[in-house]
Image (cartoon, rainbow, N blue to C red; front, side, top):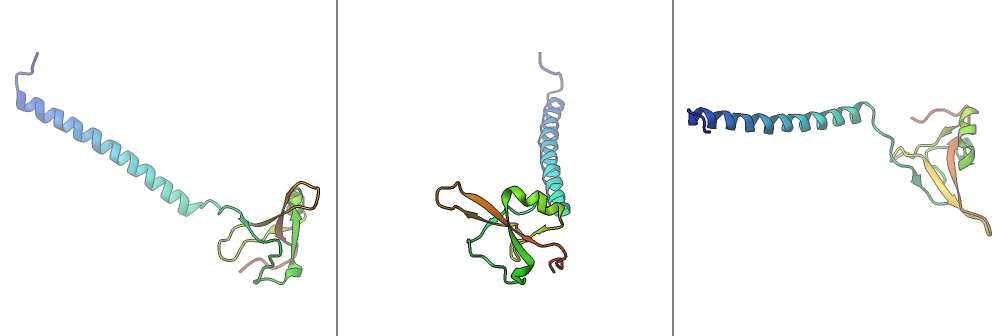
Length: 119
């Protein structure tokens, strides 16, 4: 059964399609806007940066830093150590070491307690 007023039916159909298209467009745009605002307000930290085994920070006196075994970083944080952040990427720095006959392990570069915070 067809509607008696075909032009009204077509206008209704077109209006419905426009509403569906624009509502999904605004929904996606709203989601994108929310992700952008969230990234600006609370940016996720950059991924850790693997450095060479002989890496020494240029922006600090090396005596202010310590290489800490990966399994001991939480303990050191409780003692007042802070992760060293690479000056260019602001990422935590780690190196991977392996001694003969042993499994490889990671050491993280940390700032010792009572050092000045980075600038």
